[in-house]
Image 1 (tube, rainbow, N blue to C red):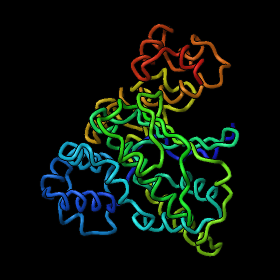
Image 2: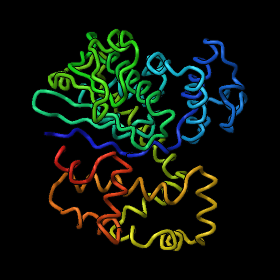
Image 3: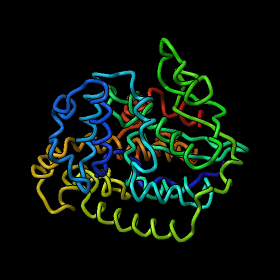
Image 4: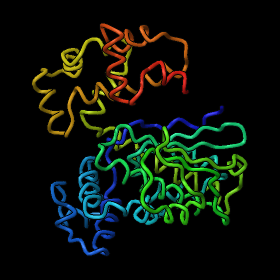
Amino acid sequence: MTQLAEPVVRHWDFPRGIASVRLLTRFAGERGLGMDEVLAGSGLTPARLQDSAAEVEARQELGVVRNLAAALPDAGLALGREYHAATFGIFGFAFLSSPTVRDAVNLAFRYLDLSFAFSMPRAVVAGDRVQMELDDTALPDDVARFLVERDLAAIHTMLAELLPTPVPLLSLNLRYPEPSTVEEYTAIFGVRPRFAQPGNVGTFDATFLDAPLPLANPQTVALCESQCRTLVSQRRSRAGIADEVRARLTRFGALAGGMPAVARELGMSTRTLRRKLDESGTSFRTLLDEVRMALAEEMLTTGALSIEDVAIRLGYAEASSFIHAFKRWKGTTPAAYGRRV
């Protein structure tokens, strides 16, 4: 299997532009929901939404999504179809101006933190097919399905804008139980999904990857990508405390040191670090679990390490503790997961 570009971010907690929240409130208003109802608890105000250059924290957008999903739980697919290339600004124009579908996908992954994604995408070429997976394991349970449906429909809409003839899906697997009706899925994606599957995976013919795009323009894509680099550099330089902690936890040996070691590296007390993480809506335990889960998946996929070796590298004193944690994350044992992949 040949993987396309690796997504530059592996977790949804990155700053993002205001455009998605504006779209969410417009979508809600068209369905009879008031702006105050949709923005409740997010820390955002109607006045803030008027600033097109404003940025929001991912958890603020997540709060708006949670309000919308609670009021309109079956609207995820319809919402996703509202996300067009223009919604993403310069990032979307770079996408459309790419030479081929492959170039567009790789560009999207390089600048994924300029998107509004919550379920993290990954694409792999397997023989004559491309497998596009949306990982929702880090999402809160109450909004995971809604966001997968939104993001899946948004990706499908964007791909449809690339070519005169939309890229047809060959199959679509979803992790969730089958709903009472699947007509909307079939109408949008052209295939009947299989539900209650191990992951959220759509497949399409790999020959579409090298299809030339009608709006391809070398000068435009170069200019747009230059602006993307500038914008993403500015955003990453303002990344919050959660990203700083994640970055340190991924260093070799850092997992065993725990919160005191990370706090020392950041030049603050454990108490201050705990307070800052709490203010950002997360905790050290949550971030530690996220990093351990991602690293565990990588190490188990290679098959080169025993369960005991993986546990040691992740900072566990005993393999049994790692096995218990992994079952909590993925719903299966590390050994079963390793055999499956």
